[in-house]
Image (cartoon, rainbow, N blue to C red; front, top):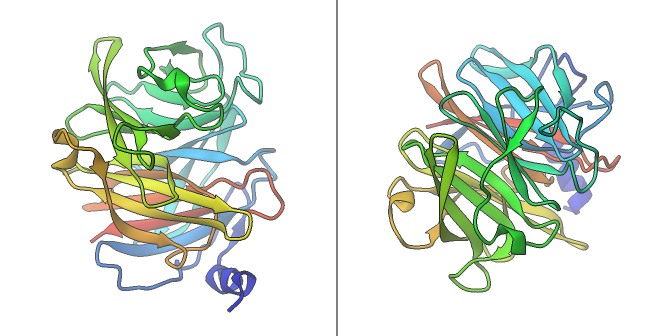
Length: 311
């Protein structure tokens, strides 16, 4: 099967939905993945909002989904489930991310938001590439104040900085750089654990080892202390491929470089897209996992949402 036919087969039945989603279809792909049960998919029409580029996610226990765009925007909508499966999204709200003075961040090097995490006190952390930094927001619609960045992040390539921010079950931060080499060999990527102390963060450097040829694009903590890491590879002839990797609970507590086990191959477990966001939440007695793709503002790509339950 040619790549284009394969993609059309995987996407068959996905609903193209505007801001107020109304239907969905099951995720297609192998149904017998041992760790994740597919609960549905959405293809979102981003034209009513005037932007796409969703690049990181947060899912709340009440199913409120929050995302940031690499165009300097925030986005929020509730997921709608029917009989436990994804059936749409509710009313969408969105707006610009702002600097410490409350001014909207301009698109480009100043507004390239790539990572998102919510602290236990309700504050938000947003990581940026190109101009490498982290801003802390009480409300994503309000001003963002700079906080300490991981040491060495300033050495990252402009488009290869902080792609993943996650809150672990023990309250620490996990930060992942997209293409800054780590200390565990040329294929490793720089990673850090952050300890919160009041308004400050103390960082400890480590390394993350992705699958061959891939780079991390997001991360999310799991209730047991482990984490999920989304990875991506792009080539001119091969297009987008990726995987969702699992870090066991013992990994963040150790001193060895972080290395995950593949839980999803993207594709064939889901369409070939620019997968950039992953989030985890407990809801209705289940642990839910949601993925999002970044359409790069391209007519040849899509913004897809996938929902799974941890078995």
